[in-house]
Structure formats: C-alpha cells, structure tokens
Length: 132
Image 1 (cartoon, one colour):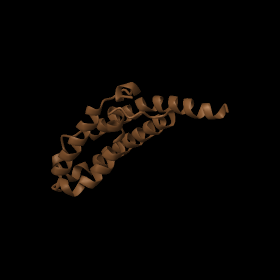
Image 2 (cartoon, one colour):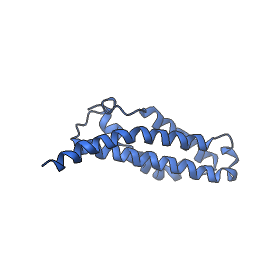
Image 3 (spheres, one colour):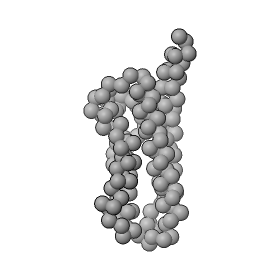
C-alpha cells in the first residue's frame, strides 16, 4: 500500500512545511533548535506512519484504522501547538508575521479530511467484528 492509496486529502509536503515552520519559529525565540529536537521528534514520530505507508508497508484493515487514528491525533496536536503559539505570540516579536489562527484552521481542515476516512475504516473493521 502506498500513501496515495489511502486517498487522504493532504500530502506529506504539508507535514514537511509545518516542520520547517516550527523550526523557524523556535529559532525566532532564541532557543537552539537542538534543544527542541526531542519535542519535534515526538511529533514527527506520530507522523512516522507516512514513511511506513509510503514505503509500501502492507497493513491489515485494523492497521489502516490505527494508522488513520495516529494521523488524526498528530494533526490535532499540531492544531493545539499553533493555538498555544498564538497565545504566546506577543512575547515573541519574530512571530509577528505568523498567522497562527490560519495555521490552526488549516490543521482543523486536515483533521476533518482524515476523519471521514478514519470513520469509514472504523465501520469496516468494527462492523465486521459485530457480524461474527
């Protein structure tokens, strides 16, 4: 299975762009990027499914549902990060030009897009168990 086979309405480039933006924002605070690599790594680990699926990992139906669940959780975490940064924005002049509200809305849109696929997979997986 390839990533495109999941038919999720966003691309890995969006995840990469968000990662680059996050690094830029952290650097704008005066923190060294290496000091937050662990945090960034944790977020990206949740999105590690992208690499697995894109490299042809064959998942059973339950695995596909779990993968979509992890993607959804990762996107929700990103949304909350953008919201938090928006609340802190006045403390960091380097963030002045960043529209955290729009970033949060985009994350919500991404999650909503994944949600219909996640629910579809849940019905396929758990509906099948209920028929036994």
